[in-house]
Length: 235
Image 1 (cartoon, helix red, strand yellow):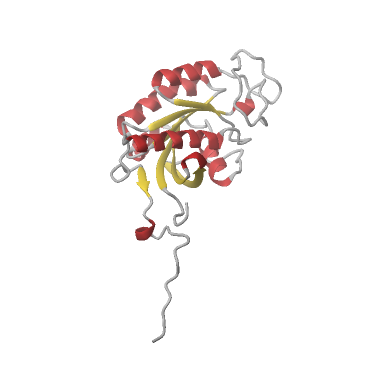
Image 2 (image 1 turned 180 degrees about the horizontal axis):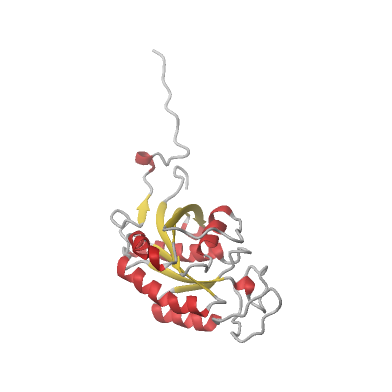
């Protein structure tokens, strides 16, 4: 990996209803911190992150656009779908309506984004569920939606199985996360990135023409990190 700061730049969008934790997921990814009460996103917000895919021997820069989840900004956020290579479609596991609405967000993405875009369905806020341990770094087992809520927790309204089945039917990747604890947040982006890189290898994404997938060119755009310094010789 010598000679480049990164090998690819990938454009990601994060979409879904308001208050499902889209901004919190982005902040967790980029800053490794959690904001309990982030300000509502007005239009779009931007963040970037370098991630390493060891088995690919690649460093990838993710350029992530967090889109507003309210109808009043929908015409604005749609313009950011164009050219995206990856999408996090986010819902709140304690809000069934946000899961139902994910269908319309997915339809929007498919109408306005690259047809080859990689989309991962993300069930956020598993830390709020009654019978789940938010400190567990692994993927949680299926949890019943009718589990009684404990004090300070919320009742799960979307089971892992139901979301997983719908994701399979729609050809989506799937993971459950907690922006609060950081559980599976980087994993969500890494899974989508691996899928995009696989599409690049197969020629689905053209790294020279697809706007959401850019190949690093260290000789031309200043991305070299260890290029030799020119020296002058006297006489």
